Length: 111
Length: 114
Image (cartoon, rainbow over all chains, first blue to last red):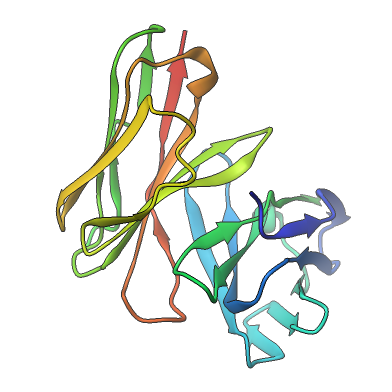
């Protein structure tokens, strides 16, 4: 069963705008990770946030984690055409070593 | 390291045939995961191994599916007999033993069962 659920399922924005994607999960976690998948390719890790962290930055990416609400958000600032991809949150569960993925958000950056 | 290597990249087979997907994880990684991706169900964890031992195979859909990891550098996912509903992209991923580390994915095998 899915642990993470991304929202929205699809998002189209103009190049240069910021894109925000959200993820909710159900059980306690060790960490939460965000991945990107370009069409026809494998998943690429973007950023990992530990359960005791609240915010993390990496380049144009900003991730927040609210363990009380069991939710996370991924913000991509100053979007570019190359950011067009699907984005997945993945939770590394406390109770075992599984890494469970949500269904993803399809992001389309319009020129 | 070349990353996680999967073969074949594409596989087309007839219903009822046996299919074997292969994966070579990154050297030194202790965890290996098999996922299946479809439009309807997203990325599903099928099974994962720790130090070559299967830990959780609760995601394996049916007895037609089996996975092995005979050594630290090789794993297979076998479907016998294959059915059209098995058509999907199958990903292998590996991860180091340390907590709070990422999973590294292969490029996937696109399986089509006709």
